[in-house]
Image 1 (tube, helix red, strand yellow):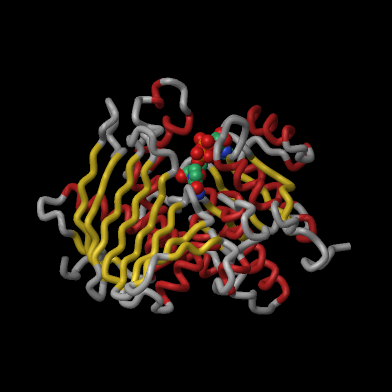
Image 2: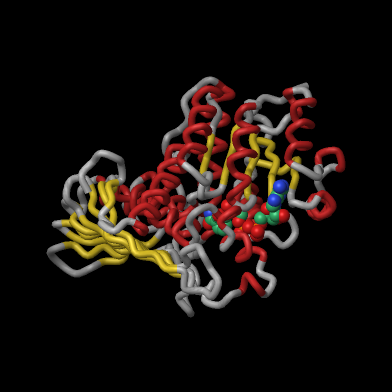
Length: 394
Ligand SMILES: NC(=O)c1ccc[n+]([C@@H]2O[C@H](COP(=O)([O-])OP(=O)(O)OC[C@H]3O[C@@H](n4cnc5c(N)ncnc54)[C@H](O)[C@@H]3O)[C@@H](O)[C@H]2O)c1
């Protein structure tokens, strides 16, 4: 008997995320956190033997533990609908996002894909069209927007709590690529500095895209034009590992975005500051349970993740009582909860609760790819100031 989606967990498969991989394990913990979703199948690594060994580590059934994503997809399509996965999570290096996502969407499966979505805007357009045609749910793990206090910040900025936004400063600084770790066995570094796998951008694609998503989600502002300076500081590197840019937003606000992976001592130092006519807000991902609000009049105050009076979206994104730290995995899990809410709603033919189905979708992924392309265009242009969209003033 096929159980209705109200009486069973959603089933998913993972592509990538094998032994020694980084983010696949985070996805699995995040997906499992609320007991809504279970991993039932996978093609977990680039080598068939390692893929199967990785699947055995996770107790996948032998007949759902595949040596390639093509074998995984073919097997799912052979199964009766009541046994199939509901969605696939794609956690491979960037160059595989497009072929794998397109194949699963074309076959009618929902998808969670890590960022950056794909390598080019042409690929993004193809994927957006496929998702629209198939009506599939598509989440992109810009996971930082899953933090409760990022949702609170969005509520306050877009609700006018700091007046009209004048200036936005977003920075994402890491130090793990300060030396040539790609030549000393770091698999994560090796593909990130290789344009054929990473894409045309380095740090700007890897973490600058998170910064763009965070500022756009929180402020709702649209970048009108940008002026970019990128560098490849690491020996032998061709892709940027450090960069900064000035931003002009539609409506007159101004901003600065910095992303670097060569800042010795920086870990995952992602910060967002939004300055308005009536106050400022500051949030930092290494201390994500705090949000500083400095109003124009009176002393600054610090909101905590479980403060009285947070907006419903922030309150619903929290799991623990005040004072118990929540972090990266919980924020990531909120993306999975949102995707699961949309899939269940679709299966049952009803709208999803918008407070839960609050996660970055394929349009955010496509915008991120376009952003990366414009960053690169500005960095090689003599005029530097480059419009976000062709034909618009810079
Ligand atoms: N959202 C975030 O915070 C975040 C953080 C880190 C990485 N990422 C993104 O996640 C993705 C993976 O990054 P990572 O650091 O985990 O990389 P990684 O190198 O640690 O892991 C990649 C995995 O993909 C597997 N793989 C490669 N080719 C494959 C294929 N053909 N079939 C199946 N599996 C294959 C590898 O064997 C490995 O298991 C990237 O797109 C990256 O940008 C996102």
